[in-house]
Image (cartoon, rainbow, N blue to C red; front, side):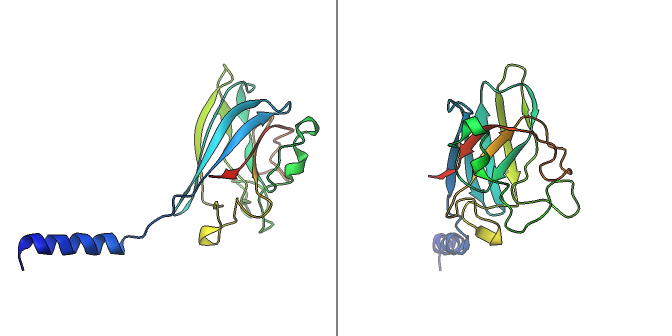
Length: 176
């Protein structure tokens, strides 16, 4: 067999045996309590979790807790986005990335807002999946989910939300 045929067969075998990752994506327009859009988050499924990219302006400077909440609604901004319920947490784990018994599936590292009120950040979570891949909790389940930005930083230990304080910004996560 000639060399070119062997290379073609080897390439075809490599392509056929390579697992294909479904390009699942979602996004969340981030709104303030008055309903004004202040930014956007993009979520991309990977083989081991979800990459979350967030870009926003007009936030108060400093560290802020950001979590994935279990219900996809941000319709009650004036009431503090409480309709988005608690964290994505079907395993009923305690809150906190630093908690030996946790974390819950909605826990994320803190978001740091620049002095001018802007933020551009990426987070990666292995605790959730857009569609439930790898037996991780699904973000895009029947009642959806929301990204919620709180007033304070998360200490990653204190129950139930790490001292994060009131909810000031919210984004319903929608599949693309």
